[in-house]
Image (cartoon, rainbow, N blue to C red):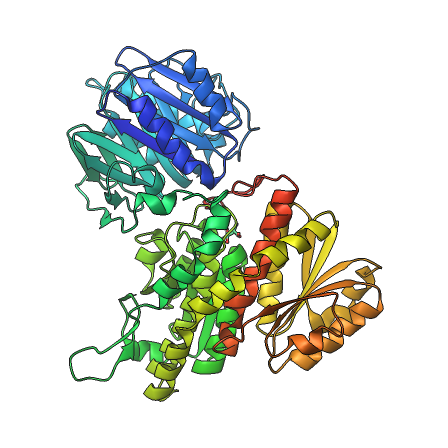
Length: 617
Ligand code: M6R
C-alpha cells in the first residue's frame, strides 16, 4: 500500500528519498512522487507507474535540497494517474502533503472550503488547502499548530506529512490508524511509513502512536499529543540488518524468502521453553505478556481473526488449540468480525494474526474485542507494530523482513506461532504434563531440516510448472490440516500468476464443486499420511474418475498408495507432528506458484493490484 519517506537536514535529500521509495516498492503502488522545499518554492515531481518514471523525470531537472517528502501511492480515491499522485499542494503552492490511508470526511471538508478548485480527485488534497488556510490565519505561521488544528477535523485513517515553504527545514507529521515511524540520526530528521525506508540511515526509530503529531527538523524530533502536550512514541531498535532486506543473489524476494524458511522457523522456535528461575522446571512463554496467566486459564472460547494468508495460518491454529488446549475456536475473516455481533466477553480470547501487524481490518477486529474487555494475543512478525503494541500478549514470528507481496516465510512461522500458542494455552490450563509439552517442542525442532528436504523438490516442481503453467483453472483439495494449505496454495497461485484457482474441503466436492471437473482439470490434492488419508484417497479417486489430472502432495508414509491414483506425486518427509505437517506441505505449493508465475512472465514480487500491507478497509 502507499509508502512515505521524508528527510530533512542533508544536501542530497532527493537521492535519500528515492532510495527510501525504492525500499518501499514492495508495499505495492501505482504512482510515485516527491516534493522539495528550498524555502522559496515547493517543487513537486510525480508520475504514474513505476518509480523509474519518477526517477527519469527527475533526471531532466536535477535538484539539490535538504528537505523533502516522497510517496508511493496505491490508488483509492481517483485513478492512478499523474494528477492524483502525491504530493498535493494547496492552490497557492505554499503547503504540500503526502498521505497514507483514507480521509473519510473529505467531501464535507471540501464543501466547507466553499468555491475552491481542486487539482485532483483525491481525498488527500483538501488537507493541504486546510493547512494553508490555517497558516494564513496565523500572525506568526506555525506549521505544527496548523497541522494540529487540521488533523483534529479529520475522520478516517492517516499517516500524513506536511511541508510548508515558510518553514524550509521542518516536516510535520501526524498518525491515526496507519503506521508512521520517525527518527533522527547525525543531524538528519526522518519519517517513513515503514522502517525498511530508514534502515540505511538508522536502526533507532520511534513509532508514533495514534493521535500523535511530530515536528521533524535537523535538530531533532519532537512528539506531541492532540492537545499539544509533549508525548512519548514507542521507541525501539530494529533488530534486522540491511542484508535481510536485499535479494542476496536470488532472482526474486519471494524465492529468497521461500528458501529462508528453515532459518525463520528455527528462529521462531528458539528460546521458547526456559526456566523462569534457576532450579525451576522449564515453561513455555510468550514474548510479551501483559495479562495474568490465571485470566487466560479461565478462557472458554477463542476467536482467531486475520486476513489472507494469515487467516490460513489461523485455521491451522484452530486445530492446534482445540486439540491441545481443549477450547472451542472460531476462525474469522477480520474484516467481517466487527460488523456482526460476535459474542465476545472477558472470557473470550481473541488471537490476531498478522505478518505486518498493521493490517487495518485485523487491528479493527482486535480493538473491537478489546472494547468488549476480551484479552487479545497477537502473533506478528514486525516488532513494535500496532498489533504488537496493542495486544495483551505477543508471540513474535522471527521471520525477518518479508518483502515479497506474496507471503511465504511469514506464513510458516505463523503456523509455528499458533502451535506454540496452543501448547502455551494447554500449559496455563493444566491440560498437558510438562513432559508432554517438552516432548512436542523437541519434535518441532526437526521442522527446519524437514523444510530443507521439501525445498529439494524444487527441480521436480519446476518441471511440473512447465507442464501446467498454461492451465486456466486449478482446484486444490484437502482435509483437516490439509484444507488451510489447499486454500493457501490457491491464494498463492492466483496472487502471483493471475490464474483462476479455488480450494475446497475434499469431502465437499461431491456436494457441488465436482461439477467443475472436466478432462484435464488440474487438481492438487494435499494427501499426507494420517487419520484422513484414506478419505483423501477416495476423494482423489472421485475426481480422477471424471478425468482430472492429479498432482498429489504426499509424505513418506502415503506416497506408495498415492502413486496408484495420482498423475504426479511429490513426497515430503513425515512431519514431526501431524499438526506441523502444514509447514511442510505448503512448501511445494509456494514453489509451484513461483515457477508458474515466472514462466508466465509475471511480476512475482509486486503482483498487480496488491499491496504488501493493507492499511485501508
Ligand atoms: O500483514 P498481514 O499478515 O496482516 O497481511 C494479511 C494479508 O493481507 C496477507 O496475508 C495477504 O493475503 C498476502 N498477500 C498473502 O500472500
